[in-house]
Every structure is written in C-alpha cells, then in structure tokens.
Length: 246
Image (cartoon, rainbow, N blue to C red; front, side):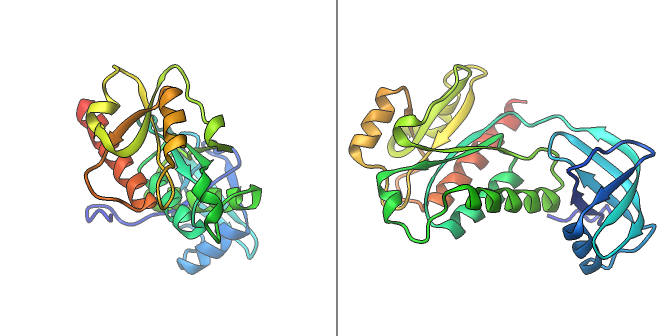
C-alpha cells in the first residue's frame, strides 16, 4: 500500500555489506530495475539486506551491469514476533504466490512439506531449483514491501520428518480444530508454527501421526480453503493478534 505523505523511494536488495559513508555495489538485476524505474545518478534509494538492516543513500554510478550506491545511513530494524510457516508441496505458481505474500507479512521461516497428495500435483514446486525461485520471489516481495527481514528457507521434508522446537507452538490447520486464535496463544510466548495440507487435504493417517507427534488442530472456519488462501489467512490472523498483544 502506498503512503500519500511520503515520496516513493525505490528499494533494492543488497547481499553485500551496507556501511555508512561507503559504497554498496548492486548487480545486474538491480541495474535493470533501476533503468525500468527511470532512476539516475543522485536519485535517493533504499537498501535492505534481509537480515535486519535498512539503508538509505544515493546512486553514485549506474551502469548496464551494476549500480553503486553511496550509503548515507544504516538503521537496524527489529524483527516482528515470529510466525513459522510449513507449506505443502503443491502447484508451483501458487506456492510462489504464497511465498511472496507470506514475506510481505513478515514470516520468520518457510518449509515445504511433502504430503501423500503432493505427489499427484503437476507441476509441483520442489527441489533445489524451485527453492531458488522461492527465494527470488521473497526478495522481490521484500523490496516491494520495504521489509528488513527475509524468511529463512528450511529444507523440504516429509510429513514424518516434520519437527518443531521447544519454544514453538505446533498448529495444523483443520476445519475440525478449535479457533486458530485459541490454539495459537494457549501457551504464553510460544512461537506459532503452522502446517497445512495440499489440495484435497491431509490424509487421515498423516493427520493422526502429526497429532501423535504433538501438533494441535486449529480452524479458520467451516469452509474448505485453497492451501495458499489458508496460509495467508493464518499468517494475517496471527500477525494481527501479535501486534494487538504488543
């Protein structure tokens, strides 16, 4: 969403150090986007490194394959309260859309889970090459949203290899569960980690194994949602509740 009281400033992802009064070099992709945005030398830009730092500076040089930014200042940005997402391996375009929107909402971690019904999806999003696409989409979303933190992408896992940490509150999205907010904040200060199934849902034996492993069912309502809708709805609900608590 644009803010009328601020002039728009282009944001670029920087995977090199950002230090005040120093030059940060961006690559060919940033140079292309700068030209598309009709930017030029001396224009003000914003940089984000995905690990909590945001910088402002001016374009010092703009070449075909690189952009050099003279950094004026670097600010540290506190991370939002963690929400962890465990997404089903499913249709790759819908997974990419989910990755984009989840990044805009500031999730802490992303992990793809192979369910039995995942294998029937084609084309599905899995493997190292697809992980690279997920990260690229997340970077684009970070630039667009002005965020400072890139989600950590964890390796794909099977249902039986899915785990959670002691500090996390494991939740399965399921119509038969209690309301999401009741399940998510039953334990004080626990970080919600949310898993949900692919199109067609989680098979009964998979659900039983997850419940036996400590996962708790939670509902977003009585209707059946597409997996990308369920993921975004869950993150949005949890994020709003966390901000209200803060």
